[in-house]
Length: 477
Image (tube, rainbow, N blue to C red; front, side):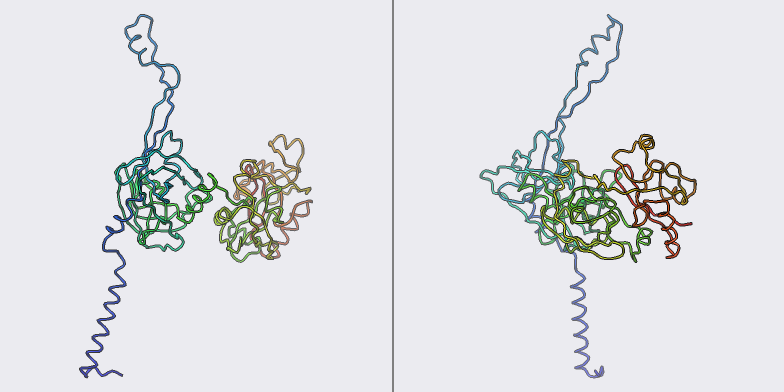
């Protein structure tokens, strides 16, 4: 035990406290003293992009006047037949990723542009060509011929290593003011705005119109994102900006550089989110994974043995926590690669091996959403708030049901019923109840009895809707 009355011990304690205080101050000093050195180093790699687009305008209708009217000749000079064309200009940003002249920007910056000009940090300008573009992730790759100009390129960093609260810096061309530097922190990661392949970094670094396509840097000077969108009701920055993650952007630009287009992996399933109600009907303890509502006929998943009602919980050893994660990891996997797929079926885990197809090729051949046809008969039941009929040529014609050979069609919905609350509508086709294909009137009765015995609160139906199929959980009242 230390004796505070001893001067030597007192001095030792004082020194230790001072040292600890100094360490805490050093650790708390997380904000950089200045961004000047980083901005000076990186600014030459950021470019301004100016585009010219031809916009067609319909000629305005001129008022008509009586022959000989003094206004007739006056308005004739403005009345030109046919569609008029005007040239519209827009500004954006980009950054150099290769000294040979490869430049990255947003697709919406250069989309439909007749002419693309790249202006370097020293105001030198070059006309650019489009190597490839990807509207799904809003990424485009350009190429200029630098001739004798020495370009300074930047490198991609690992966006997965970013943490919420990390400092980031944006450089771009907001509102046409070139070479503008702003700084902030990572506000959130993994944001999904609207697309299946979205992986956005949210930041409070000021991003405005014209920043689109510019880089978001970490404090090591690596590109961790492409500034793409803002959330604003006024059109100006309100501290909520979004950047395409560098890991996604690098994956896309590598493909654009190699093929001139993207080549995404394709599994061939229609999936939906697993709610707590659906999880309960499937006997799952927690809602996780992606529920297969249908498998494309002849697609990779069907060939591997995936069936409607399976729950995908792992893909290529990556855990699928929710539905939104599956399209991203599948798209990022090489076409033709065989990967393990772990599914839940009837409460048991199964591992299948699936060889991925190419999404773009499937889209071109209109394979997306084409479901497998099996000789299975499905019947009706109205106890849960709906009435239905077996499929016939008459009700197929009445409800415009095309390419449907199995199921029962809903013909009416009771008010305030479970069916109405679950969103069932007249004309929908019921294909399965729980994990069982309905081939007799007794199937639904048996499933209700089983649900009551197991004290389940809902019954799961597979329903054919306009754009595919989806599972609906009906509350058992």
